[in-house]
Length: 361
Ligand code: ADP
Ligand code: MG
Image 1 (cartoon, rainbow, N blue to C red):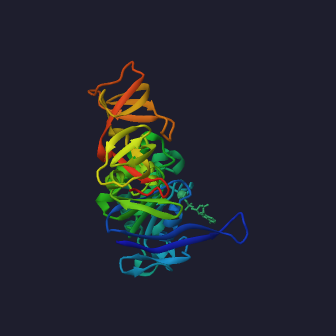
Image 2: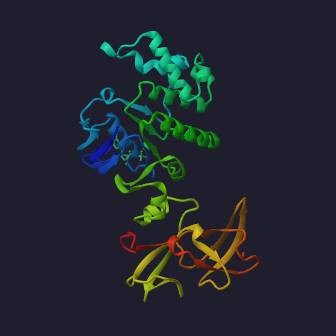
Image 3: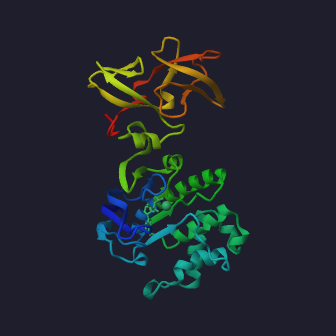
């Protein structure tokens, strides 16, 4: 099911100041292709949950429309939209077994959609198999681990075969290992069922690893949408560049002058065709090549070896963060025991942003 958001806007009355409004979602335009998994990604408070609640029908927008295929669902109540919902702390019914929890959404079906006990059992088993909890059908929620409970919640969201599956930070309560494992399973289930899925997270790594597309939001607005790698490689502004990637992109004060990029007193890169201006310079950690003839001189702090990766931690008067992190190969010439490290820069790993607007230039 293709989902289209058209000028979607949600204003709440401010809980703090009388008469004031909070714009949680601000004229969002976006199309989610049929059968894809997309992530709404952004910092806490940027409007992800509100967007999801508008799509599910738990909230009604102040302005704009939501389409499921050719159907305008903007004013349709949640139960008529055919969505499956999973929240971060989706409370299972504690007194019901796993199976009873899963079939719960099927029990209220009316008219010709009403199901027999046997049919409901079949559906529950199918959904439970998908999330690999079919051996636990008679247990109560308190007899399950956190990861298993979340699988029950997912099975329950899938049992009615939703037109759209909506997941709001579904893995946040799981420990790191389980989170990794469950997200890979979610991806597998999504591929197997082909159900259009919208996944909300503030965790860029999670979003990058499972999505067909990511939608990066800030303060209710869409900043960039696209394939995860494309957004990483081609960020439209400083916010997006900083939000994606661990370690974070390194940011420096700099300027373009006579087709050279200057950081401090050094011309660190040729930038043919660029006009003179003040910029923020973003350099991805993998954009540095250490070597004694490099044009960019930084002050050495330390070298960290982490498995395959070697990180050089250094500093520079024009940097904006706490340190410069560069990830290099162990085959590179490492500045062991030196006070300075010199780098060459990989041009496609260096992004320039206007100093005022912070838009990419
Ligand atoms: P996210 O899920 O990205 O953390 P939310 O969608 O929950 O963000 O919230 C977006 C903004 O809308 C926040 O500023 C939040 O305080 C505000 N907000 C959300 N729900 C309400 C509400 N019911 N009443 C007033 N403000 C709200
Ligand atoms: Mg939220």
